[in-house]
Image (tube, one colour):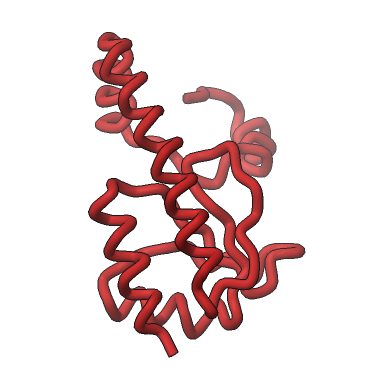
Length: 129
């Protein structure tokens, strides 16, 4: 949060991260951080699911490449990001189409979900023709 002259705010808006964090999210994170064991379990789940999801995605015909990631998401190059994105949306699976970003032609950004969410994504993508 920043309080400043409008000119300074305009500069900060040009360099800030593209996604704001809500007060509810901040409260959730602060509360979660009080339980280190729970945080560690969540981190381990995300790491395991990221590896599992990467392995499953690279086997699909509509996925050309899964880029290395140290984050809670995977960037994947597809055979047709716009079509796949629309297909996933029509099946109630939300990812981010990054095709308009520099060097991200036909790329989707897939956030690592729960095992059940990741299974749904994989199973739906298997039906994509």
